[in-house]
Image 1: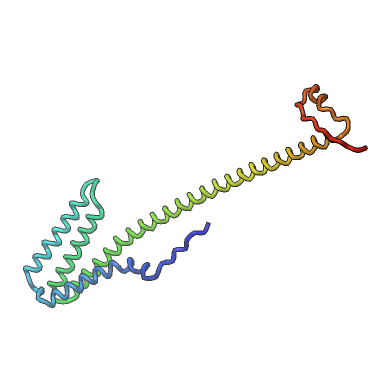
Image 2 (image 1 turned 90 degrees about the horizontal axis):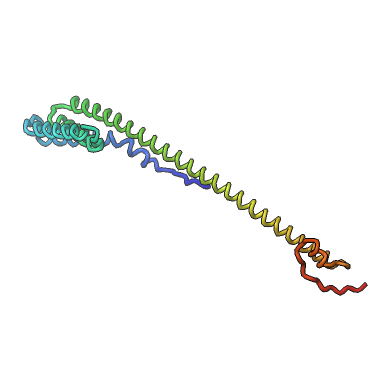
Length: 202
């Protein structure tokens, strides 16, 4: 059985790895653009970002509470809260050191969460591939057994046909001999054979 070869383009492999740093860098750049357009030292803008970040964090806490919490929704809410906090600091702060520090922390946290997700996804993929390979092996074994059984049945049928042909040839040859009497065979308890009218020249 030929298994398909899965070759992915290097961009397809690299894109998920670069997603966390691209996301945090985008937030940092947008925050600095906002800073250059009047957000610096704006208490109203800073208060708005604090409220939005706190609201997102609270939504994430509520989403993750209890046994029936939604992990995806909670993760999205916490990520939004972090992005809003980073954008608020990047827009409000005077210089780059504090925004860059928060950008580094946010990027590290993002990669920590992403690595955990990638590991889980890889484990699930390996388990699925292993299960698929085992099912294919089981099916191949069943197919081999059935092929052997069919071959044995064909061989038995072929031997039976050859035996029947040999028996028919032997009976035909016996009937052609002089002095053959089918009635005597019937009296001996053998099945009655059809009489054969053979004219031979001696």
